[in-house]
Image (cartoon, rainbow over all chains, first blue to last red; front, side, top):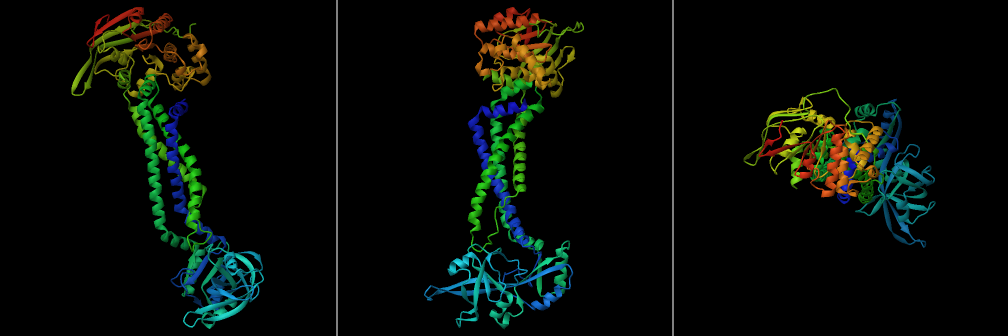
Length: 401
Length: 238
């Protein structure tokens, strides 16, 4: 009966209730978006890191992977040390560089250069790209590229490219040049959609880069044995190889957390404001409704309806508005999150796989729980007012009115 | 039709309503209003009492005290031999639910509920099983002559019909006492007469009724009239 009465009081002023529900829906959408934003980038980054199955990354001491042009010397020696640790299962040294490729038309006339990032990798253990079609870099003269670079080059699989590295702007010369065959297409997981990227075998890139980068790597990616603790391996590496900074997924996420703390603060503040606006909206609506029904409530109390039941009915009204608003807000929030994500993800230089708004069921549950809790809280004041109405006095006022 | 008849209880000689030197003062701004000034009154079981008097003489205040929706400033109020003037809110609510039926001038039916659901509302509060309350509500509506209006909402009923639904609701939990505050105040003479007749039938079936009214017809239909003036019973007290 309480549910019927609560429903009745909401239906009685349909337009008002609908507007309140829509208001709560907007607040709920905002809240959901903020919850998704607060955790989205972090979770998305974590998924990106674990997606290729590498647990540790080794960068030159004091840097983050590909943060600078610094490299780690002595790849062979470091690999040898790493192999002493039985918890290390796979080692993937990666050398990063820039390449320049001239574009020529069908008549062989030069039409400028395209520059691109290139990774020197071992294709059997690489964790930087997802191979899409063609053949991987199984031979020293092979190169794979992402679609963006292939489009810019107007090249096709099987084309031979004149690839140059080590450009010196003063002498306008390259340290190394080589003819490489475009063997396949790949999607570089850490690259942006509008960023050219290619990969060759590491020894090929080392040979093109010259003596200065021989036996150098920009990064080591390491897989640990199943069941081994990556953080213990990390500590071991930093002890035995002092020239590197070892970064586990946990420490990488902690660093990302630190860098994104302002995002989370912003999301927290905006989320709290949305929740508060929703709370005020429901409190106002239910309080107005209770004031309008003071005579009716007094009669209910007179005929023996307990205070507790009056409180439950009024709180139920608040919860019903919040819940309905939350359900609509969920859809609205997902739609706006998708739209905003598309805008933010187009920010230059961001990896394609990074999402700002990542939907996780826990986000929806959190937003829903917060809204229902705020709906209960919003009903408390009007419920208290309703339950405290002096019966005789309210009836007298109603009679006079 | 015998639905509202009280189950014969063990003979109880005590008055069903007993007020002794009851006073009720209100603060009205800086002023103190003495709404009741030492009222002593008994109502016997099965009686039908009309409280009459000019506006502001304290009739409704007296009814509120008998109905346990207000408490006296001093004096004692007993209903069915039980002190009710110092009950907690919880005790008073429970007492009203099971012992007192209210009929108001403006009916105060829940607009969204059907006639049947309105009558069943106090029974739901008293945790009467759903089927039983449906059945009893239907019997009560039949008793007040509205068996064909069970599914109608208050807005689909005339004033007289709404008041009859309110009377049926007042009888829902088989109260020992029915209190009515100007029950014909919103009705035309003809419909008012029907309600008067209904109250008489109700009383004849054993229900104790106390009614506050300006309506001479309703007051004349009562077995006993109590006149009030300036917060005092001037005629017809215990």
